[in-house]
Image (tube, rainbow, N blue to C red; front, side):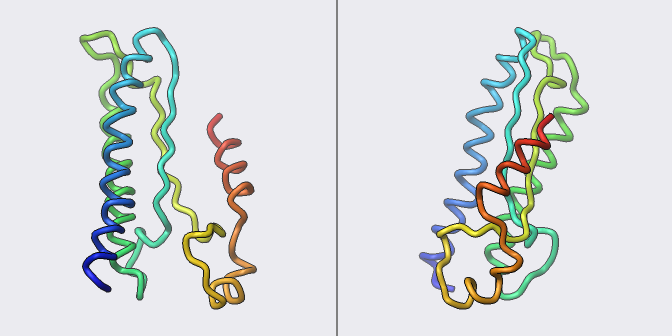
Length: 134
């Protein structure tokens, strides 16, 4: 895989994901001071759960997303009320790990023919996530 492609993948799948959490967590902590709940749903991929050839670079970037979400969620669940008045129990953090969602990111005849039966539409997947929030 060319270095430029790997660099782009890291920027999209890792850097942007980390910055999204950094941006919203401060705002969610502030909201929790007034008793408001918040939820941040990140998306990784099932590839981060194991070694998947030929997607090891992609799986690595998705693993960083999955582990970051897991770690922050652990910290939030074990902190409770903080001295500044924020309440971490009002913040939900989820990381979804889909198997196959039919997006326009990769368009190849191979994907469309081979994975058609295993690929969910984006709207179907999002509807499922929304129902699971509670």
